[in-house]
Length: 112
Length: 113
Image 1 (cartoon, rainbow over the protein chains, first blue to last red):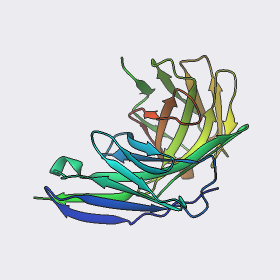
Image 2: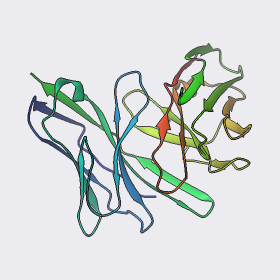
Image 3: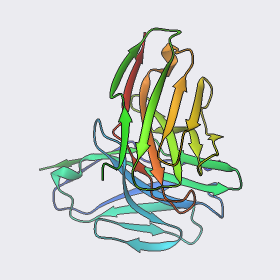
C-alpha cells in the first residue's frame, strides 16, 4: 500500500504561488496521484489528477518527476479563500482490490 | 443535480445501538465509497463498491457493513456502535474506479457515547 507524506501546515500570503509536496515512495505502476481540497465541515473537493510529468488546469498545476516518488501541487496567486486542507491521494484499482491512501493533509493558511 | 447526498447530517448513539447511514448519488456513477475522518486526520476508506452488485473492504472495515442497494444508493451500517466509531463519515462516488475523480457528500457527524 502506497503511503503518502505531506507537510502538516504551510503559511502563505495573498498573491503568492504555493507549492505543496507529497511523498509517495511506494507508488505502484497503476497508481494515479490526485489532490483534493477540503474546507471545514465539508467533503473534499477534486483539484487535479496526474500520472506523470505535468498537468495543468484552471486552478492548479501538478508536477510529477520521472520516478513518481513525489508530486507537487502548485497553486498560483493564492487568495484568502484558498485557506483549506489539501490532501494527496494515491491509489489504483487492481483486480478486485481497491487500495486508496489519503495523506494526512496539509493545512494551508493564506494571510492578507 | 444534487450530486452526493447523505442522511442524517448528525447522529448521537449510545454504545451498542445500531444505525444505517444513507448515501445517494444522481450522477449515474458506477463506483461508490465510504470513508471516515477522525479529528485532525485524513480520510480512511471503510468499504467501496466498484460497481452495482459488488462491495469490497477498504482499510478499516471492522464494525461496519455495507449494501449497494442499486446504482444510486450505498448504505453503511453500524451493527453495534462503539465510542471508537465516533467520527465524520463521508460518502463519495466516481464514474469509474480507476482514473476516477471522486465526488464527496457533505458528511455525517456521528457521536457514540
